[in-house]
Amino acid sequence: MNEADRTPLVSVIIVCYNCRQWLPRCFETLRQQSIFDRIELIIVDNASADGTEAAARELLAGWTNATVIQTGQNLGFSANNRGVEAARGKYVYLFNPDTWLEPDCLEQFVLALESTRAEAAGGTILEYEDNTLQAKGSTGFDLFGNPVSPAGGRDPEPLFCIAGFYFIEREFFQRIGSLDEQFFMYGEEMDLSWRIWIAGGRVIYAGKARCHHRGAAASNPAGGTKTVENRTSSFKRFLANRNFLLVIAKNGRHILLLLLIPCLSLMLAEAVVTWILARSFAAAQKSCLAPIAAAWKLRGHIRTERARIARIRQRGDFQMLRFLRFGFGRQHEFAAILKRGFPKFSG
Image 1 (cartoon, rainbow, N blue to C red):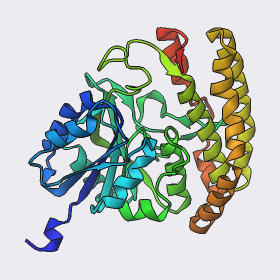
Image 2 (cartoon, rainbow, N blue to C red; image 1 turned 120 degrees about the vertical axis):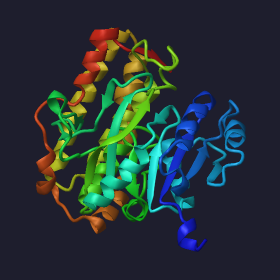
Image 3 (cartoon, helix red, strand yellow; image 1 turned 135 degrees about the vertical axis):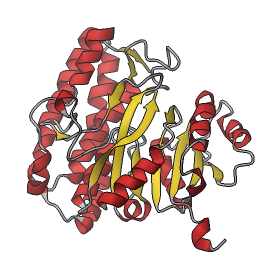
Image 4 (cartoon, rainbow, N blue to C red; image 1 turned 90 degrees about the horizontal axis):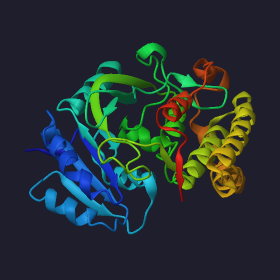
């Protein structure tokens, strides 16, 4: 067998943090992939305390195409960068352990990119227990900078931002700067999608690539494989709000920087609503006000990123305005409130 035959086509990267319970099914569906002999699996463990690393090594015993990397600290979702550094595949697939893939998921991604010559793709995300649609991705962003889902169940075309998990050419991913490690988690898909389009690339929707996802398994664990309550945390809202400010500040060139004004206004409104309904000023301050100060403290990082993005930029703000959508990208949150009530807050 020559070197080309030994080089994997797809490097699957899974970042883990205290997720031992999700690994058996996730790994089994990887083993059942139609192109299993052409993939490599890279597990990146963020210093889990529940035995995740040991469980992964035990479950992967005998796999010749699997590697486990220990970071020694919790790097969040950006630990994917460590996995990509070790990857050898033409493509990388970044996804979470609270998932399972349908047998031809990875093959469908490969077929989609190779037939369209796009640089990245997002698939169809279904609920963990059944085929209920969870997300397809977004067709653009609203006046607050939030990603907007396609209306009426239509497919997102073009796909501006993927839902959750990225399938992307490895070399292109590294060329445009990989994941911003300041984010820690939340909002990375929006930041990466914006940079792909800015750099002259394309993101497509690979509808036949189907993945089942629990979602919010760490911040909303009740119900096991099924979400049964509306719960969030001040830390999650802090990161989500701060990172949306970073996305706009980094990637907007001039006119799209104006999105910061309604984005800030929305955060202030969220703070008031959280204060009233959660009856906790501390929750409102940490989740909605502190992110503004935190983003300001990162202004040096923002300047550095803007300079780096300017060097890869091939599309300006006026070209990116094609993705501006009228509507409200967070309407799904209102639907969740109507179904299960205002979110319960944890620390």
